Length: 83
Length: 83
Length: 159
Length: 159
Image (tube, rainbow over all chains, first blue to last red; front, side, top):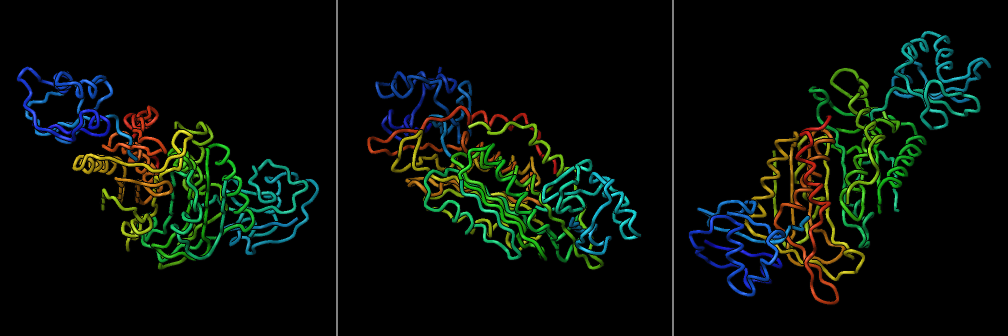
């Protein structure tokens, strides 16, 4: 699946997007964030406080407990500040 | 004092304004409307339902019980429909 | 605060009024405009035109009092109110309210407050021209209710 | 209903967008516009510019969902939402919401609803340029509260 990062999540991870294949025991957005945080220093920094990070699956906002099965595109970003 | 009439009050009275000297026992807007209603057919028609007529003294909205002493300009009109 | 109140026969240019209000300032973060337009029907029946009668002198004073109240209730950086009188054809503009503030909520609330009061307290009377004879438009109780709610509502909103 | 949603780098012309929306129609009685403008300061400190990052594709989808919700809640005759991205200098416009209806309250409420949701749900992130290094703007809890109140509020208002 494709991961997208925006704003300071993107800056901390150091890239705007990447393709990943999460392990089969990662079922939810929260689980995916925990798994990502273990992938290295930059990820640990980006996901150090998962409570403040928002997520979207296939361009729709979702909660941390949302299942990731079947997702093509998952995005992580800080709370939005448009308007 | 000067009286002004607007919209259908003006049409019924048949003139936009006039100078009057009300009797000394007319103290309030409500009293003035009762006195005006007795001045002829057109006034009786204009003031037949005083509850729906609004008034202003010197360009400020007032209630029927407002005293008219010292007023220079009193206006009578239907509920407003601007905006 | 910059306040402009104008009564005129001619149509207005909302964009020009907004430009005048905001000018070269950089403290304005939010501008709300309300434009009231003459509809082609009134209560489902087509109309040829509206004619707006007004009470010269009192209109300006009454609008001025409400602009001052809006200024006291919300942190505004500018207000413009323009109201036309005379004959107005369907599709033409009737009334303009522009409010400017640092943030959006005061601008929205002040514009809605001013419109609710213009409807019920500014001395204007609309007459409708149909094919037949002209008829005065009745005041609506929902407009009174809309103006009334501001008496019990807190002044400045969140943010 | 006519709905226009646009994401662009360039500044917009609010008057031109209103003219497009109202056109030759004679059923529109009320038009509300909200224009968000880049202020010259953020939390009291002067800024050189804002840069708006966005999530292409999701922005349009998310705004589209809220426009559809506004349409379902209020009797609207037209909605336009334009949001800029990229670098924006103080005094320049950022976002435009235009709502048109027969009457004023639906137009006011729908515009405020759309702005409250744009602030908290549309995937945009503001970065501030100061003399020093760029800094991401923090989301405000008052914006969340403003969006939240629409969940518990009735749909269409009095007239």
